[in-house]
Amino acid sequence: MKTLIKLFLTNLKLTIRNKQLLFWSMMFPIMFTFIFGFFFGKGSVSAGTVALINQSNTPVAQTIEKTMSDSTLFKVQKETDINHARELLKNNKVAEIVVLPEGFGNPTSTENKIKLIYDPGNATTNAVVQGFLGEVINQTNYQVQNVKPLFGIDQEKTSSRNLSYFDFVMVGIIGMALMNSSVQGLAIGMSKYREDKILKRITTTPLPSWMFVTAEVLSRLIINILQITIIISIGKFFFSAHLYGNIFLIYLLALPGAILFQLLGFTIAGFAKTTQAAEGMATAIAIPMMFLAGVFFPIDQLPKWLFTAVQILPLAPFLRMLRGYSLETTSPLDNPINVIIVASWILVLLGLSIYKFRLAEE
Image (cartoon, rainbow, N blue to C red; front, side, top):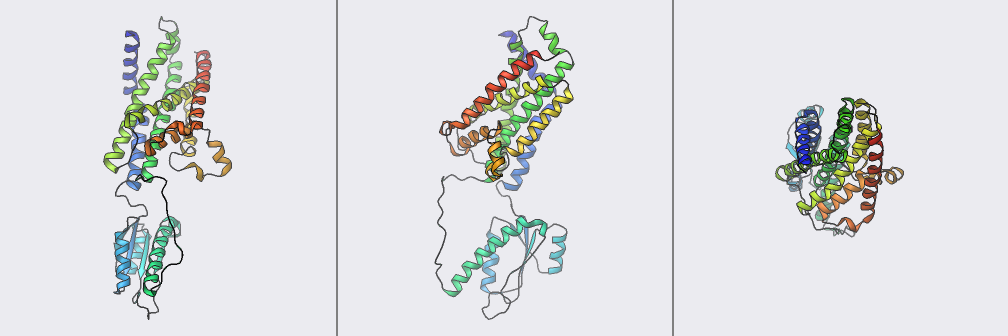
């Protein structure tokens, strides 16, 4: 046991001293957390800044201006000169221009249409602004004509919890961080050990192979715990992220994912002949999985054939379990297929890593 502890501490020191590994393990997920937090976290402006030119003094125009200013969908910047506003739009300082023409809101006026000026390359902002103003105008028309809407929308939330897109992404970044640090770190690290003949020297010592692997896994788990702690801390304290699951159980639930991706790293190291090959294989596996397994967006938006395929990727079911408990406090056993897929991957990768890593040429 003393030998295992010493070996664990040694591996932990070596891991911390590896600046490149720490960058990928810590700075990469931190950077993504801040980027998505600034865009979608508390106080963020999702659709950019809209330049508003209100040339009308009617109550209807004033109401629309106030409604836009109170909206959290975009930030309103008041302008008076249309040419200056066009220059701002050209230089990407505003995302769209909204013009309320003179006389707008007066039933006898011929200028009762809001003018939207936007860059076709920024269709997302235009869709948000157009949808928002369309709803405001419809309500205004009903009020002016004293007409009660005949049809409407009745919404029912499946959960009363206050969740945002950033909450969804933050949990995805946790999964991404565990995957990248384990796959990249272990695959490249073990391949480097092989090239430096360290693994061969270990086999000639009394040190059992399982003890070396266990110490390596434990040291990586410490890094994983730090990653989760940093991401959650940034999300909660800087961007008011929501996590409704018990924080200790979230760490516990992340453990199988960390082990899964470490096994994937050992498997890649077993197949790769050189450090460069391991780096290429790890990147080729991690990058597509990061974008296809649901880190940044729900995978049900994918084409049906691709959705069916990515359902069984290691990261996808792990994120479904982690998000389900972290955001909805849903037990992983409520959808056992996710548990089965993750457990199956762990068993398959365990067998492959034991077979290939043991027989890899030293």
